[in-house]
Structures are given as C-alpha cells and as structure tokens.
Amino acid sequence: MTAAPFSLEGKPGRTKPNGAAKAAQIAFDWGACVQPASVEWYTTKPSPREWLLRDKRTDAGVLPRARVGLLVAEGGAGKTLALCQLAVSLATGVPWLGVFDVPQTGRTLLVLGEETSEECHRRLYQAVQAMKCAAPAAGVIDVCRSRAWSVGCSR
Image 1 (spheres, helix red, strand yellow):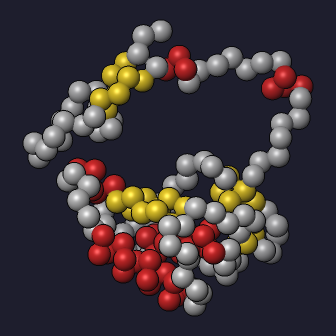
Image 2 (cartoon, rainbow, N blue to C red):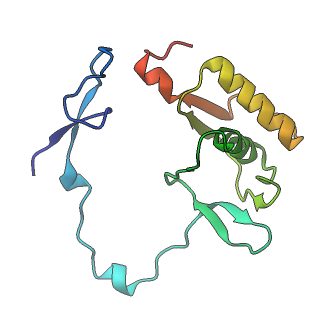
C-alpha cells in the first residue's frame, strides 16, 4: 500500500484560504493503521480499560485514559471552562465538577481552539477560582492554542 499525502488542514496539498503558509505535509501510511483481528481477540480476555475519571456515585468509568475525546455543545455553553476545570482536576486530583474522581493525577495537555495566551490565562484562573482549589504546580498543565497553528505559534 502506498502512502498518501496528508496535511494538517485535512485536505491533501491544500493551503489555508487566507494565504498563510502551506500546512506541513506528512506521509500517511494507511497500511500501518489496519491490522487483521487475530484469534486471540475473540478468545482472550482483554486487559481492563483505564479511565481518566470515575463517577463517585456509581464508580463507572468516564473518558478512557490516553484516548481522544470530544466535548460538543453550542457556543456559550461553558465547554472551555469545563475543559479547563478538567485539566485542573487531572493535575491536582480535585474531583471534576465535584462528581468525578481522578484515579491518577498527571501532566495534562489542554488544547484550546481559539484562544490567545491572555485568554488561556483568564480561563485557567477562572477554573481554579470556580473550583476553590489550590493552583496546580508549574509545568503540570501544558496549553496548546490550536489557533496559533495558523498564525505561527507566537505567544
């Protein structure tokens, strides 16, 4: 199987409509992503799933650990504040929204779609204030402003 070009824009070889620099091109090998299901997949019990959070009320797992998740709602619903609070919870161990325990704290990557550095500062400050908790240690939360991808990652 041959590698097909893949851009961060999602469309092979496309540049940004505003004329900004062409998105980085990487080779994407679909063959490396496809594998046959072995007999063991049907006959051997898999290892237990690790959860990012556990519901205090039911002990049910919420959000599989080390997997991509998506929070969707209409504008102004509080998605960014909720995600900032989630990052603080994962960094400090304080239950998220008061209901979801954090089985294991650790370094957290917070990806925000359309925020400047100043707005990220405001959002994380608001999250800690709303949670009434101590601030995470320096360097435990890394913030990636995906808007910065299109403008060259200036701080």
